[in-house]
Amino acid sequence: MIKINHSHLQKVEDAILAPYAARSSSSRGRKYPEEPHPYRSEFQRDRERIIHSRAFRRLEYKTQVFINHEGDHYRTRLTHTIEVSQIARTIARALRLNEDLAESISLAHDLGHTPFGHAGEHELNVLLRDHGGFEHNRQSLRIVEKLENRYNDFSGLNLTWETREGIIKHSSPYDNPGIADYTPDEQPSLEAQLIDIADEIAYNNHDLDDGIASGLLNMDDIEKLKIWNMARKELGGDIPENRKIMTREIIKRIINLLVTDLIDTITGRIDRMSIKTYEDIRAAGTRLTGFSSDVEDANMELKIFLREKLYQHYRVARMTVKAQRVIRDLFSIYTGHPDTLPGGYQKRSEKDGIMLTAADYIAGMTDRYALEEHKKLTDPMIRV
Image (cartoon, rainbow, N blue to C red; front, top):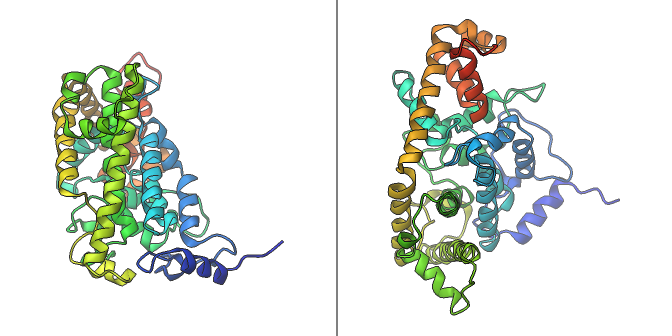
C-alpha cells in the first residue's frame, strides 16, 4: 500500500487548483496545532469534523420555512445545507477552486441557526439586544470554536482559520464583533465568497418548490416571473403534461441557469480584474461573486416574490408568532430560574452568564425539542 504524505497532497493541489484557489497546505492553521494527517488535507479534516458534530445532526429537525411536523417532504435546515454544499462543489470545481474548503464552509454555515428558522433568530436577537444581540453566523463560529465537545485536548472542533473565516464572513457585515480575528479589511477566499450565492440559489429555489407543494403559492403568479419563463424557454416545446414534473423540470433549469451565469460572471471578473493569485482575491476591493445584470434582475424579482407571497403568507406568519412565543417563554424561564437548566448549563452559566448560556441552550434546540421543553415548563399536566 502506498503511504500518502503531506507533500504529496500539496503536489496534487498545485496540479489541480487554479493559482487563486485556497490551498490547505498554505492554511494559516488551527488554534491548537495538530500533526498533519498522512492522507487527508486540512480542509478535508474540517469537513469530516463538521459532519460528525452534534450541531450538524440537529439540523435535521430545524426549520427552513415549514415546521418539521407540517410534512415529511419539506426542506429542513439539514437538507438545505446539503443542497448548498452540492451547488458550492459544482461552482468550485468549474472554477478550479478548493472543493474541500467550499464544502466545509457550506456544511458549517447554518450550524448556529435557532429552531424555527429566522423567526427564532429574530426573537433571540431581540431578547439579547442589551447583551450583544444574536446572529446565527456568530453562533456558528461559537459552536465550532467552543460549544462542540468532542476532543480531549480542546473545546470546539479546532477547524482551520480559513474555514472559520468563511463561517463568520458569510452574509454578514464586517463590523460584526466576532470578525476581529479574521482580517475584516480583507476579502475572504473565493471559496468562501461563493457560499453566499450558493446559499441564495438553494433557498430561493427549494422554497419556491416547497411553496408550490404546500399550495401557498399561486401558479398563475409564478408563471409571470421572468426567471420562470427564462427557464421554461429552455424546455422548448417539450413541456411535460404532468404539472408536477413540469414544475420540477423548470426549477431544475432555474438552478442550472443561475449556477452557469454565476460561473461565467466570476470568470469574467477574474479576467477583467487581472486576478492571478490567492493574495489578489483577498486584496480585491470587492467580492468577485455575482450574476450578470439580466439574471440578477430576474433573481431579485424571485426573492421579492417569495418574501411577499410565501414568507409573509398568513399561515407562515401564524407559525412565526407561535415560534417566537416559544422562544420568548423558554428564555424568560431559564434566565429567571437558572435551576431549570440541565446541570452542565447551570455550571456554564457561572462562567458565561445566564443570558448567553440560555441563548446557547435554546439556539441548539431542534424545533420538536423546543416545543417539548415548552410544554414541560408551561403545561402543568405534562411530566417534566
